[in-house]
Length: 400
Image 1 (tube, rainbow, N blue to C red):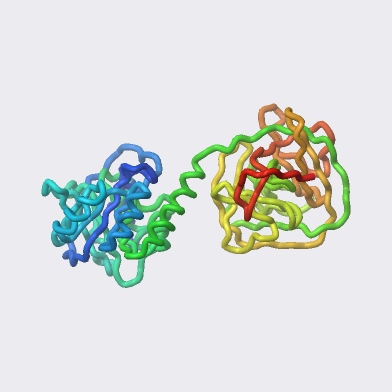
Image 2: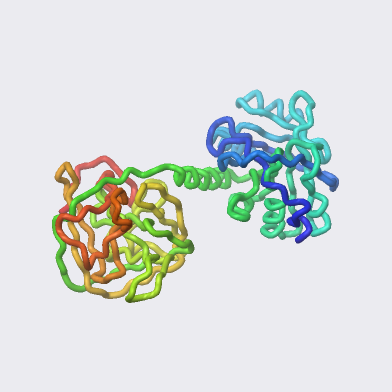
């Protein structure tokens, strides 16, 4: 398999063509086909990669799956039968493509893609990006081996002009192809007959798309710092490394979440742990994907949280471990310009810090709670306070 990722064939990954979520994103539903193996050649490009966007094609003969895909903005479908394509086209606005052996054609009988089956390292070597024969390639991995071949394809097709997709039989498998070598393939052909896989893949794309947005953060002035005694605090250990200026949004009230710094900074007291946030006690809220909150006590291995930096840029991260231990706590209260008060409990320790606005010349990104004093400014995230199972709702609520 190393041959497919060698310097002779590694030209940069194909430019992405279809939007992640927009209605013009290409989606393809496919009937069964048995394409022959072929040595596929694609032209390399020196252009820089475009924004991270993914193509989704759906392979199905289930009309409910087709409807679910169209409702989620995926409107290109691949068929093995023109009769089925015409039938579906009469009930929904779709862009049908058709399989003929190892080749895929549009409605005007123009060749738009070629299918290549890969079930061995030798067959993988035949998929080379060095010429211009096709615009798109669909790779059908066989034999239950997917991750390493997908990584080799990503490496081999860097900077190519065409689009490289892999056939996936469920949403989890699709995610593997979309994340191979972090950048992923250009897209997937989702071969399913269960609409739940369409819903799950769209939810996955929604989470990815959210991470490109920027959360508005507000400066709040510390109005109270008080040692309060013992409590059960939660350390959140992630499967990702955090950088200086990054942390988790945590608060006693969902209406105002403090940006708690990770333990990535070097100190004289303990070694750096850039995967950890000493986040607060078990009752506190933490921000999770989808605009929701979760109690710190509810986090466990495999759950997702969002990591935010001091500029509001954020990304999702997987929780690897949660540690709950009894530790001494400090109560911190802060007020914003409108006079609203927010609070958070944190462990009374030098390694626990709140992130500040990095606009001055101090070079600091955070203030340890042991040095925090009235008048210091920290960053908070203002949002709706009323919550039901972590979801923001509109209702009367008083928290104090």
